[in-house]
Length: 266
Length: 273
Ligand SMILES: Nc1ncnc2c1ncn2[C@@H]1O[C@H](COP(=O)(O)OP(=O)(O)OP(=O)(O)O)[C@@H](O)[C@H]1O
Ligand SMILES: [Mg+2]
Image (cartoon, rainbow over all chains, first blue to last red; front, side, top):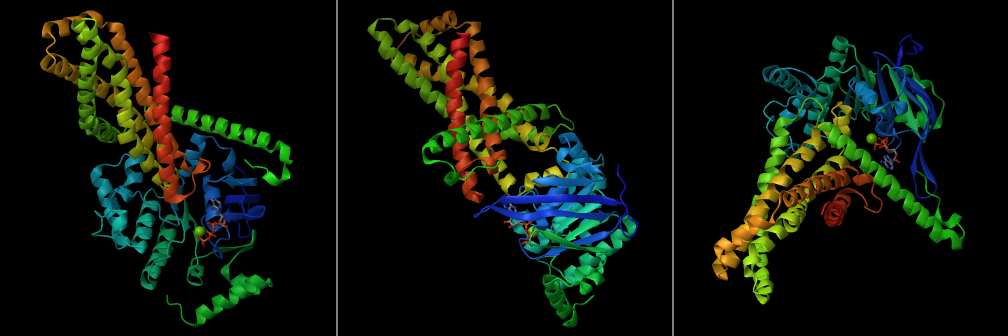
């Protein structure tokens, strides 16, 4: 395992090295990531932000090995994701708790069965233990009373929360959350962030959160990665963004500051 | 893999380029499906075994298809009875009706019609289900939870199909022979004893083995093609996107599975007869 030191002396769990990802486009290729390099430090929370369609979700899928980069290497715990065999990849994925942007719930299973699935399939817990743990998570996410509903009977925000509950079941080391609070009301959003802050202290996981929820999500962030037109800018803390001179980031800061003034509540 | 834009290729060479492109696509597709078949079969032996899911699939593929198989069998058996009587009567050989009906059913019609009916009923449903799970990222979600989608999703269907189709075929044969008996003996007045004794004399173990081998192969073919097409719905050229891609791929899967059944029917007969 290669141990890489980042600025604040945390080991890097995820490392992008000169990664390029393109898709077939109308005129030539649609370049989503253009030789980008960054690291995600262990035990810290990294927020990935950027406009719509800038490659945030693609970045998460690359980390999980659901997509392959055109060139460059992606290391997770020192292992090159693209070169792993099926079994090794499966082993690596046990470390992750993933929330997809569209929640990706199993639509023929109920809320309870969705959340219980990782426990049933991947642990030897008894039915009773599973029921208890699932109920506890559902309570935290204010989903009690909806256990027997199917995903088609839920609102968008509820689906997101069920997805969150499912992602948190196996005590993952690394959380990859794609817009965990999109579609939630401000109160619920605050609750979710408080839940993150609390559980992170208890469990000490590494979190990568894609979010448009700025500046709120910055309260959690140790590191911020901004994606724009295939390039990344990495900031060791949210505060540093203000000092950037790049025009698109200045614009981004303006917008963020305005939001801060007009009152984002804790 | 990257395709060269058509406009970069000299006009006269385009048909050749297209042919090559098409060939590469078909080879890759076959390769993918081959690997899929391997994983699908291997998944049956992986732990933990999903007993309940297999039972559910047995219910869907097997028990659920019984009514369709019953009606198909009784009507084709009766048609065979009438047709057989009509032909044999010309030679005064109505006594051979039992033999004609039962051999046709056991060696040909039973396995083939059962496979075709089950493909239409259960194969299309499986293909659509898996295709939808693929496009709504549910299969990706399974993989991210380190749950093997083959063991969890595909292999229970494989196992259930391999159990159900031979049993349904056996049922088809019995019901079909009964249909032939109804038409030949009860309607046309063939001697009942002659019907059954000619059947007993002509049907050998080898004929029954041929029918069983066919039904296993057809069961595997239909479940492989239907689930595989659904699994790779996003990789199939020209299928489009979203709901439309699933519907097109489902249609395609049923057509390919049915044709494969007919082709393999000939091949197995040619090899084993
Ligand atoms: N499977 C795919 N096939 C082709 N192009 C894709 C695919 N997935 C993503 N893209 C393209 O990659 C780019 C980045 O998409 P991505 O989903 O990562 O955006 P995003 O930053 O997550 O945006 P949003 O905030 O709207 O979710 C987009 O231009 C999109 O069209
Ligand atoms: Mg996205």
